[in-house]
Image (cartoon, rainbow, N blue to C red; front, side, top):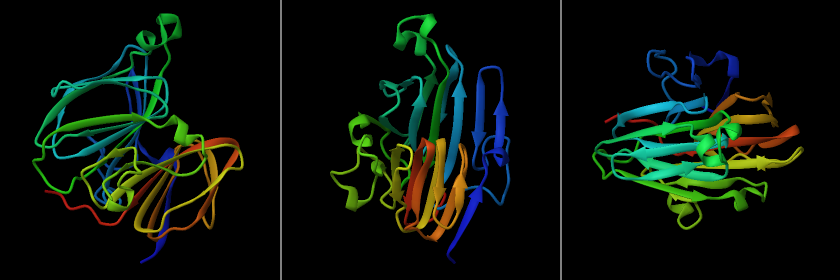
Length: 252
C-alpha cells in the first residue's frame, strides 16, 4: 500500500559517549524495536559525529554492503584485506563485508588537514544494505564525485542495478538497490525516484518535500510504493541521500 512515513531527527535512537554522537534511524546495537528494523533493503542509517583523534577500533562485519558518506571532516578507513582510504565530502565509498572483514574508522582530521590546529569533528552517515548473496569475496571501492554533485541533481552514488551500469560512481552487491545523493543550493530541486521502497534522508540543511512538508536536518521520509515527489532545498541549501529499492529485506 502506498504511503509516506516521516521520521523526525529527535525521535531516533541515540548513542552518546565522550568521543561519539551517533543517531540511529533503525534498531542498532542495544537499541531494539521490533517495529523499526529496516525499510526495504536498508538495515542501518547511522548519523555519526566523531571527535578528532577518536573513532571505531577494528571490528568485524559479514554479509553486508556498507556505504559511508562524509559531510564534514575526514574519516580514515583501514581493513583486514589491506585497503586504506581517506573519506571526505564528495567521495563515494563502499565496503563489501562478504564472507568476513574487519575494519577501523577514525577521525584523523589533524593528519589530513595539516596539524592539530586544523582538527575538527567528522560527520558522516553510514548505511547498510543486505547483499544479493552470502559469502561473497570482501571488497572496497571509493571514487571522488564532487564534480558530479556540482550539477545540483540526483547523482547515483552506489548501485547494483543494471540501469546504472556505467553511471553509478561505485558498485554494490545488491541488484535491487541504489543510493543517490544531491547537494542542493537554496531553492534547488530534485525529483525522488519511483520505487516500491524509497528512503529520503537529510543529513545537512532542510528541504520541502511535495505532499510531505518540511524535512529538517536529521529527518527522513520512508516511502512505500510511491515516489516522484519534488524536493526543494531551504534557504541554507541542503544535502540529501536517497535510497531507491526494488525489493525488501531477506536475512540470510
